[in-house]
Image 1 (cartoon, one colour):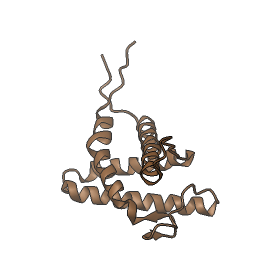
Image 2 (cartoon, one colour):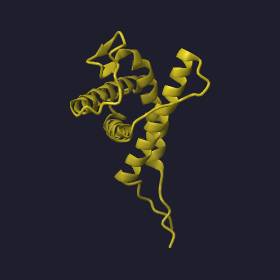
Image 3 (tube, rainbow, N blue to C red):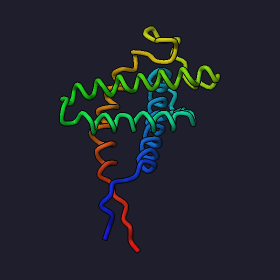
Image 4 (spheres, rainbow, N blue to C red):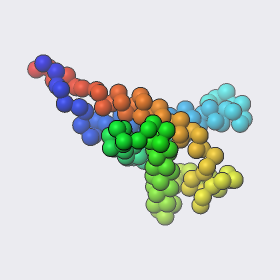
Length: 148
């Protein structure tokens, strides 16, 4: 019979990492297209993004499991968005010290130290809603079949 155990930490980290990286590539491709009408849809990312998205989304998963019965959905979405900004700033700060930060938001009006920008807040909020309602929910319900 199949396993009744949820996916382990490494499987979930893998799913969240890949999901975040793919979303970043798609976002940068469409954002660049909206600005320059470049039909090549060149999306970009960094290998660092795999680790950052994976760990940040595991954090959102943890928040979801802690808060789902105690906070309404809108409050959770804002907390997730705050968490994402915290992660982006923290990882960006570390990577900047190592001269390895792949992003720079200095040219945005509402940036902080070039590491985060409020202009992306609606996208992070929407992304956190999708993350909770679909990615995390379905990932927590996935099971591996242990056929012998």
